[in-house]
Image 1 (cartoon, rainbow, N blue to C red):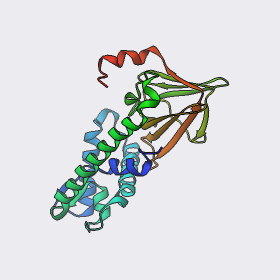
Image 2: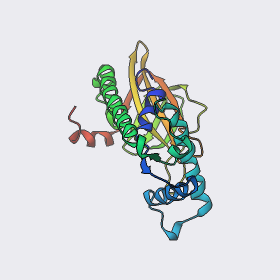
Image 3: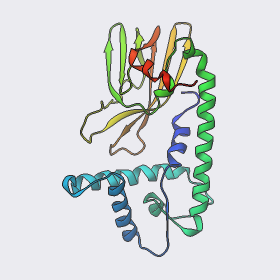
Image 4: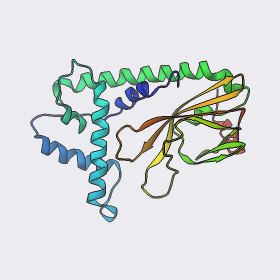
Length: 238
């Protein structure tokens, strides 16, 4: 990835941590409040509540937030344990939200710039790369003459495909159960003398690993899509 790198995407992820102001609550009280908010956001009701399972997922989210907090400006001298829960003192709450807003704007500008810079590679192929972002992986099939990436929107075919980065990373196909799933967070496509290179920034969601981002890069002589993607043309104003 040349533009939408892990480092830049982590800043974007940081911008979506939901911070609420607190006044005099203790850490334990804030932990309980944050856990209740986590259950509510995930729409967990009493019928499917498993305390061990959801406690582990919540603690994974805290670790996830803690890692992102390394991007925190040094001027914000707040307790990171509390920030990881999604709370901040009234002194810093506005500064945090302003900083997050700035990071979102920066990433959106970069995303647009990336689209313009990589456009020549996919325009003549009529590929719907804008829809690859945040697409859920339903599987990846590796054959001698082709690699197929199956997404919830359709499939991408790379002729004579070879994985040149990320081949050892585990891909979690989507299932109906609350299991880890692999999602494309950003993509870049490049044309070279031998064909094409598809660069994917992946994230495995709902795992115990905080901010589990990795690169998946596939090289091949040609790249096409199946017909399902053409249904998106009605929404594609590019």
